[in-house]
Image (cartoon, rainbow, N blue to C red; front, side):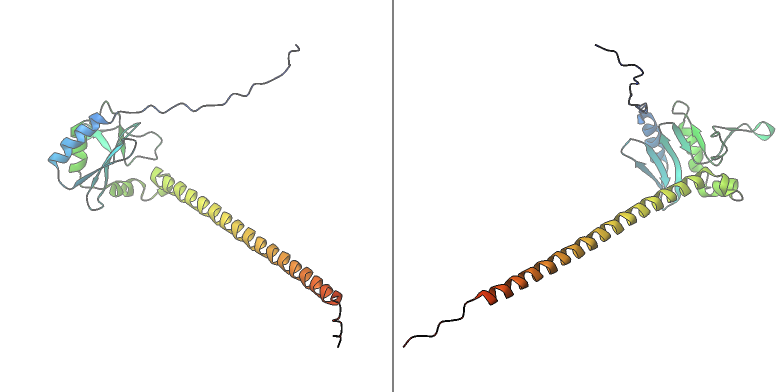
Length: 203
């Protein structure tokens, strides 16, 4: 049996599975927070991620995700000249919020966010009000808008294609019907000409 030379085997690439995070500990903290504070709403998605928002559209306060807990305000340690920013997200596009690992998040951190009356929108305006192009939130919204526009455009194209196909099919059907009616009328005339004249009645 001859061996095949220069044969490359195609291997299907598989993306690594995202490590599932247990949100139970964070849920317990949230339950204590909700018991102590009024005017808050807990939202949980199908993946178990948890969000706490202010009632009446007051905005997101914190959210538990696979990569940590997002707290929607900048966090600092120390005072005066020793005051330093902590739990900042690298890249400079999310300087209005903080991300804390699941192992480090505390009830005190979440309570501090609740006691802070500024909204996420307030902090975003402070940090990116003059330079919205540097904001990760703005970039995320623009990307989402582009995706929606792209999907809408594709749906529009599909609708136009279906409409065109339906119109062409109807047109073709009408042509076939006209041709069929012409053939029938010709055969009818020929049949009439072939009908023998009636013989005169005999007395």
